[in-house]
Image: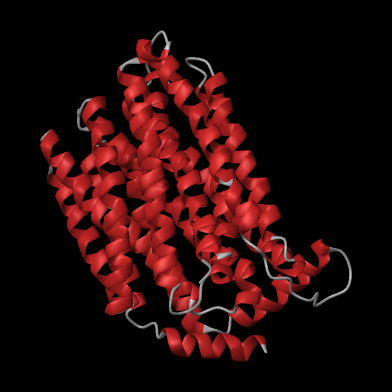
Length: 421
């Protein structure tokens, strides 16, 4: 491993995770309920937020595989990463310009920001095989997620400080503090993404087809898709991942909203999110080490089992201290299951097709984020019970874990190489 290259790659997680923490998981759900969608019924605003998350994921689902194939064909993963990153950066800053009661505009800007965030991660994930090898991939993937927790946690802590003491920062009220936080995310994301663009070298691959990059990407995607359909082992993993990561992403996006529905105050919800960030940093590294010494697949199973207990616990809790316990349990496994899923998949695919195959990976991962929030929104509307809504997520972990049991990563890699040769 080249330490400078690995660190530069991992710092992108440090950079863009601030959007995931401050915007997606933290302030936007709170601000959406109390400011952008002020005076609306809490159940209705939950549904609005769920639909906004689902729409942004759907758009990424539709474009990621083709863009990944184009990026592989032209060896331009970094260019696409840059394009999507700066869409997310600009939209994060733009949220500060949306006024009170303008929930439609807020949702529109948020959807575009999510597209930038999720789209950039498709190409960031694809660069994992460029900066690591099979022996180091679990650790490198874990390092990225761990730095993401730490970087996201540091800025989020500053943002919470701003929210609690706005006048200390020259701001008039909490609303201005939240808007300033959205701008700080944009600045942080832009600054710390620079090392990746400067120091990570993308390996140039020879062109396989004649014509424009769009045509080459289309032909490459068509060729790969026809072969992927025959790779039952790879498809089995992708479907398993699609299901269990649905539960992970839904909990990330809807946890604060769920806490508010139970009547917990904003301060405790924010502090619990900070707990997730700072516990998540060492916990993710420990999961990566566990995978190296034990087995990646077994470590993922352990995380799934803990998530099932988390959902059971969440559906029954009633006291605010229990929300802190919930946050602690989530922090122990959230980064681990994400990092190890990424590295486990990376071991099964060829480097020259990384962006394209990660397009499929993120296709299903982001499609999962359509179904999860949508399921929570629909169950919440029909049952009028947030506990039942959050409990419904368990089905994704159960079925995903069952399918993962039948995946043999070594055989899958052999089949993929044979199919693409």
